[in-house]
Image 1 (cartoon, rainbow, N blue to C red):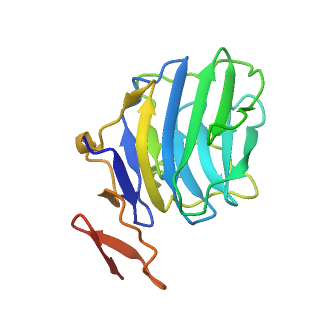
Image 2 (cartoon, helix red, strand yellow):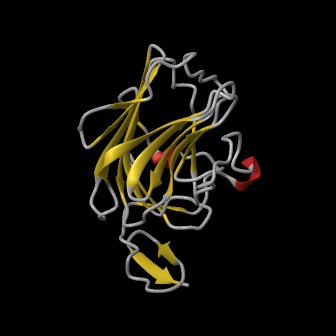
Length: 199
C-alpha cells in the first residue's frame, strides 16, 4: 500500500472517495510541513467543512450555509517539519478536532448533523480550481492556498487509505515523502521516488 504522499505543486490535491464517510465518522491523518497555511482536508457539497493549516495551527471550519461558519483552532502548532496527528471526529451533531492526541476542540452542538452524501467529494491537500474554492464562504482571511508538505496514513473510520488507487483527478502529488526544503527559490518538484528538482 502507498500510504504517504507529498504535495509539491501549487494546485496539488488528492480526491478521496467519500462514500465511506458516514454521519458518525472519524478521519485521521499525519501531516508534516514547515509552511504556515494550507488546506489539509476539504469536504464539498451543501454543508462544506474544511481542515486547514492557519498560521501554523490547525483550523476546523464548518459551514452549514444556514448560519455563519463555525471555526475552532488547535492550541498546538504543527509546522515544525515533523509529523503531527490530526483527527476529525463527527458524532451526534458535534465535530471535534484532536491534534497530537491533545484535548479535543469542539465546534459544540451543531444545528444539524454534517451530511456526507455518497457524492460528496473529499479533497486532501487542496481543492481543484474548478470548484472555485467552493461553497465555503469567503472570510477576510480566505482563500488559503493548497498544502505543501507530506500527508501520511490517512484513515477514514480506521480504514487506511491506499494512495496507489488514487483517482485520476489527483494533481501535483508524488509518492513517499522526500523533503522539499532544498529549494531556496522556485518550486520544488519530486522526480521519481526520492529525488527533487528546483524549478
